[in-house]
Length: 142
Image (cartoon, rainbow, N blue to C red; front, side):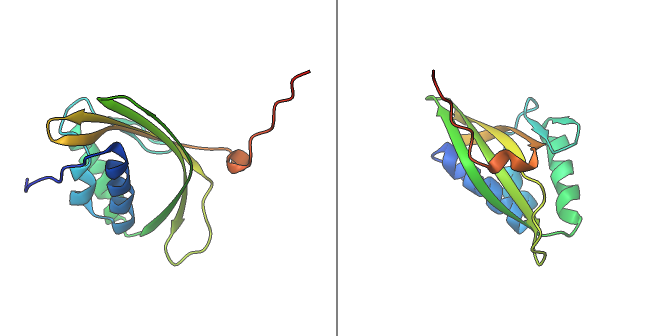
């Protein structure tokens, strides 16, 4: 594989991940993943994919499907240590040239830091209830 980019922060990897989805760019997508047989990807309603080859093949099928996706993110959370980071987001996915937005998806993205920067080791996306993006109820203490 040609020289892989170095991602100095987990946020850089996450930005590259979502840009690769919007461009339907398989090489850019796989550049964000650690080249490890322990990496995991779970698409909404899909089975657990384990390993670089299985994840690459799944993304290839998605991108070869022809639909160009637009992803808007909301409600991010981050927990980060020196060698690992967990980001959660709400994904609002639409097909380009179609104004309708599908039900939101909640995603967890896990990154690890290695000798060549940060890389994704887990992407887990699941359908979320339609009202998930509403403001959470306020708790009242008595």
